[in-house]
Length: 182
Image 1 (spheres, rainbow, N blue to C red):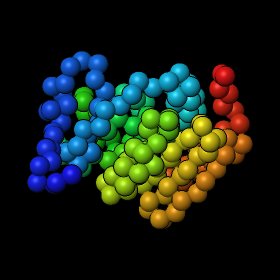
Image 2: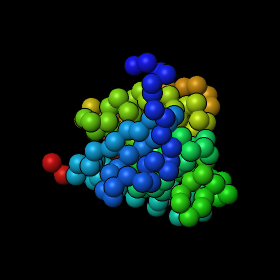
Image 3: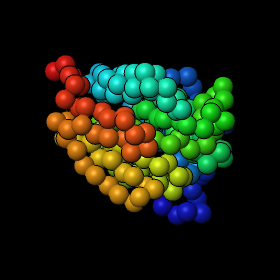
């Protein structure tokens, strides 16, 4: 595609879409999102529940959020995402619309339609934006890929593992406790 003919969109363009259109904006390009499957939503709910319980039972200084939750990366009008789960420590980033800035941690649950977005486009965007820890939870492969951008490390786990959250010592997700319906 000729970059001179590429149309850049803004957050305002997304806000003017018809109701029901779920989209994200990365570097001025709109990416339409499919309606998540039941299994995707079930896994997001299970993960969020485990994270939420830990945060609230251990008086952590962070807040977990679950999609749909607006994240305005780079605090500009060309980057807007709705991660499945994100964690924010800096309460000053939170406003009535969502998070104005970069969350500390983001979890995306991969689905057949989102593989390129989660493993390539969002991976690069989150790394360049300053996200410290990014998880891709792929239920189709029973794999969790954890990127620690601060230490420039990548680790892989399975659904038989306990996965530590490096940013929040003591927060460990035991994937053996997650039981998805068939």
